[in-house]
Length: 70
Ligand SMILES: [Zn+2]
Image (cartoon, rainbow, N blue to C red):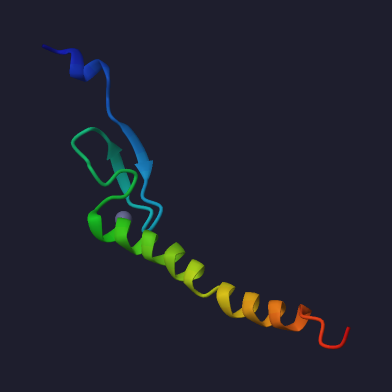
């Protein structure tokens, strides 16, 4: 049972804090080092998406496109 020694776990850098993380099945948060870093990263891009005022812009455009006098 010395097989594990021949296959060392891959080491990756946590995208959030650059900590070295073992990429193994035992790490459910990979490539992050912890659940905290995982949530921080997800929250970062989620915030960016929510700052885009898609609906407001769409409403303004549709109303502006309506021909007033034919
Ligand atoms: Zn981290």
